[in-house]
Amino acid sequence: MAEVKVRLSGGGYTIHIAPGGLDKLGGLVRPLNLGDRVLVVADATVAALYGERALVSLRQAGMNASLAVVPPGEESKSLAAAEALYSQAIDHGLDRKSAIIAVGGGVVGDLAGFVAATYLRGVPFIQVPTTLLAQVDSSVGGKVAVNHPAGKNLIGAFYQPRLVVADTGVLTTLPARELASGLAEVVKYGVIADADFFAYLGANSAAVLASEPAVIGEIVRRSCEIKAAVVEQDEKESHLRMILNFGHTIGHAVEAATGFTRYTHGEGVAIGMYGAARLSSILGRCGGETVAAVAALLERFRLPTVARGCRAADLAAYLARDKKSVGGTINWVLADAIGRVAISSEVPEAAVRQVLEEITR
Ligand SMILES: NC(=O)c1ccc[n+]([C@@H]2O[C@H](COP(=O)([O-])OP(=O)(O)OC[C@H]3O[C@@H](n4cnc5c(N)ncnc54)[C@H](O)[C@@H]3O)[C@@H](O)[C@H]2O)c1
Ligand SMILES: [Zn+2]
Image (cartoon, rainbow, N blue to C red; front, side):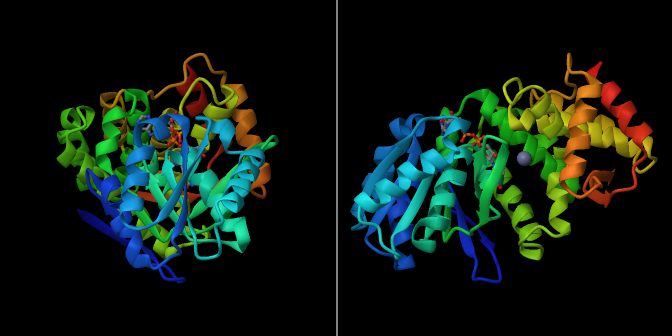
């Protein structure tokens, strides 16, 4: 089992990465000396596939585990869903030492984490991420949230888990499009921090797409390591952590302009990363070969690099809205080379316009 340690001011935690990790869950939770009662939260899809295995493992370790099921999909990241979970936590008799365990993708992780952060002013939280996106991104870093009708993730907290168990074996049932969505974030880690890892992804792309266990294990481990290193230096997102937003500025605009229905988050980020690479090249920060390398790897992973049919003006309007909400300047994450990025708020409007035109053609 590979382990990645996340060292934080308030203690830190370990990410355990291995196929079959789900069956070791009880044994990994036990040494944390929490209460015997635990509430497992999963969406209906994941509950049907993996709920029983999680419960069996926890019960074999002597825990009184019960399962709360929410409907699959982003709609479950709501205050209404959180309220239903508070009721189940009360019914199951959870006290301050009882853990809430998220088994699922980013939706369940964010929702269950928000409930754990607020129920009884905070109870222990454990993540068992089951999508690639959740294993390499949302389960690391301590951001938890629910959505508000006015926008995504508007109600949330920084709340660190006590333990993360990433069972790479469960990724075999993940639909190909969800796998690709997670791969976009994996490519991002290569671009922002590690040229060797970026090259590894290209050299092993066939094995990645075939979900070969050894390669998937390695990309989850390295991605967690990179995200953990950034989060350790900047727990609450003041500056350095912004590099994790590479590709997300344009990506969010693409997601929003298409009503969050046409593209998955990873697909939006893929388009955004290509756009950010092009922007970097227009500004003379990197050469065309960097842009070409980003595009080639994304295409290899069956991710889009352009948002055909979107209007540049619509994307510009979303960027302007974002700009307002963050205090008047957009902090662009730009690539100087594969493996090296910088943050800049001095980006001429005309260059942004050109990129938006290019990615919507
Ligand atoms: N907290 C953070 O730092 C952070 C970071 C990135 C994204 N997010 C959030 O994560 C959410 C997206 O997460 P996601 O992409 O994991 O989506 P998701 O949780 O909706 O999961 C995607 C789909 O895959 C299914 N699924 C999950 N695991 C499966 C498996 N092993 N086999 C088969 N099907 C499976 C789910 O039922 C769901 O239908 C968004 O709400 C986003 O805001 C949070
Ligand atoms: Zn993302």
